[in-house]
Amino acid sequence: MVSGKSASGMSIAAILANRATRDPEGTFLFHQDEIITFGQVEMRSDALAASFHSLGIEAGDRVALVLPPCPEFVISLFAAAKVGAVIVPLNPQFTKPELRYMLRHSEAALAVTVEEYRGEDFLTLFDELMPQLPELQYAVTVGEEDLWYDDRIFQFEDLLSAGEGRDFPSVETDPDQDSFAILYTSGTMGKPKGVELTHANLLAVTSGTAEALGLGPGDRMIGVTAFFHVMGLGPGILGSVLTGSSLILQSGFGAAETLALVQRHGATVHFGLPTLFSTGLHEQREASLDLSSLRVALAAGGPASDDLRRAVEREICQDFRVAYSITEAASMVCLTSPEDPPEKRLFTAGRPLPGNEILIVDNHGSPLPTESFGEIAVRGPGVMRGYYRQPRETRQVMTKEGFLLTGDMGVLDEEGYLHLVGRRKEVIIRDGFSVYPLEVEDRLHTHPAVQEAAVVGVPDEVLGEALCACVVPVEGAIVTGPEIMDWCRVVLAGYKIPDLVRFLDDFPRTGNGKPRRVELARIVQAELSSRTG
Image 1 (cartoon, helix red, strand yellow):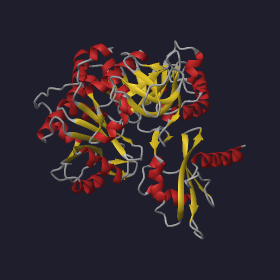
Image 2 (image 1 turned 45 degrees about the horizontal axis):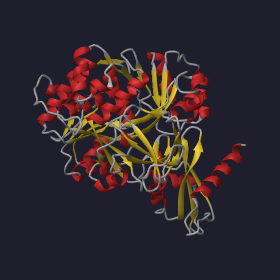
Image 3 (image 1 turned 90 degrees about the horizontal axis):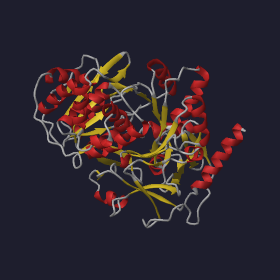
Image 4 (image 1 turned 180 degrees about the vertical axis):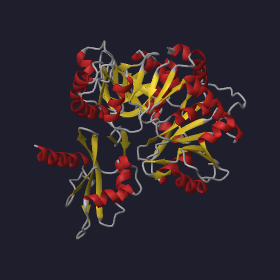
C-alpha cells in the first residue's frame, strides 16, 4: 500500500503510472461483467489524453465530467490529470439551469457526458447548452448509438481510437499548488460554490483514510455510487489506485444492488451514506444474502444514530465505522476505530486522522475550552485552496491561522473524540445531499396559489431527514401536494423536491414575524408520529 508519506509529492497522474507499472494486471474496476485492470486504464487514459491535447486542452483548463459511475469517468479523470487539466465532476441529475450555471462558473472548456441517463437526453441537452456557454468548446459523449454530431461533439470511443499510440507533451505538476478538482457544493444561501482541491489535498486525505481502514491489494470496495462526491473521487477512485485494491461499480443507488454485488464479488469494504446502510438493513432482512466477505464498513455524509450503528454491526458488518467528512477538507476529517471504547464508537465521529487538527470556536472564531459546545474548525492537509472565483466567500470560512470554519456544531471531549451536535447553517441533509430551504422556498413562492412557504427537515428512517414544504395557500386557492411537488420538479434537482407538503392557515412566528421553523418541524413530526402510532 502507498502510505501517506510515500504519496507525498506525487501527482494524480503519477500514482496511476506507478500502480500500472508495478501491477499492470491488477484488477482496478469491476463493471457489470467486465474486469478492467490498472494497466488498461493507464493505456486508455494515455490515448484519451493525446486526443484532449489535440483538441487544445492544456494545463489549467477545466474538464467537466457529467457521468454516472462508469469506467469512462475514471479514464477521463486520469486523462485530464495527464494533460494538467482540472476536473469538474457534476451530478448528471442536476437540472439544465444548474448544469448551465456550474459549467459557466467553472469555465469548462470540454465536457464528457453520457448520451442518455435516467430518461434524460444529454446529447440534446448539450446541443442546447453549448451556444450559451462560450468557454465550452467540445462535448464528448459516452454511448453506443450511431449519432450525428458536428465538429465540436465527439464520441468517447472515437477519441480513444484517435489517440492510441500518439504522444503528447508531459506536464510538470506541483501537487501542493496545482488544483485538480472543483467540486460544487451548496453555499449558505443555497447557491453552488466550487470547492477547489489540489492533488496534494486529495491524496493526503485518501492516504490517511486508506491507512486507517487498512486497505490493500486484496480489498474490493463497494458502495461508491457518486463520483461527483469527494468520497467517491478520493477514498473511492484514488484510494483504489494508491492501495492496489479494486472498485466495484454499480449502475444504481439502491441498497439491494449494493448488497447483491457484495455477495457476487466478495466485497470486503462497504462505503456509503448512513441512508444506504439503513435501507440495506431492510434489504438484508428480506434477502438474507451472504455478506461474510465484508471486513469493514464506513458511513459518512450524514448523521448515524447509535441504533443504526448497533444494527449494522449485528446484521451487515461487525466492524462498522463512522466518519465526519466534508468536501472543503477533501473528505474524511475524523474516523472511529475498532480500538475505540464502545461508547466512543457508538456516540462520536471518532478522532481526527493524522495531520488534522480540530478546534471548537465561538461565534467570533475564538477557541473554546475542551468539552465546550461551538462551531467545528478544521486545519489539515486536505483543507481546500478556496472557493473557485469566490475570494470573499473563502475569507469568510478561513481563519488567518488556516482553520476552516465548517458551520457544523460539536464538542471535542477530553480524549479528543468529536461529538457532532448540529449545524449552524440552515441546511437540511437529505439522503446525504445538502438542501438549503431558501432555494426551495424561492421556487414555492412563484406558485400562484402559494401565499407563504417554509421548508423544514423532519427525521426520516431512510433519508435521514425528509423535506417538508409547509404552505400557507392564497385565500380561496385550490392546490394539492402533488401539484406543489411537480412545480418544484421543473427547476430543482430531484433531491430538492419536497417529500411532504403540509397546508396551514398560518405559521407559528418569531418576535419579528418570521416563520418559527423549529416549531413547524415539531408540528409536522407530531402529525407524522400520530399517524404511525
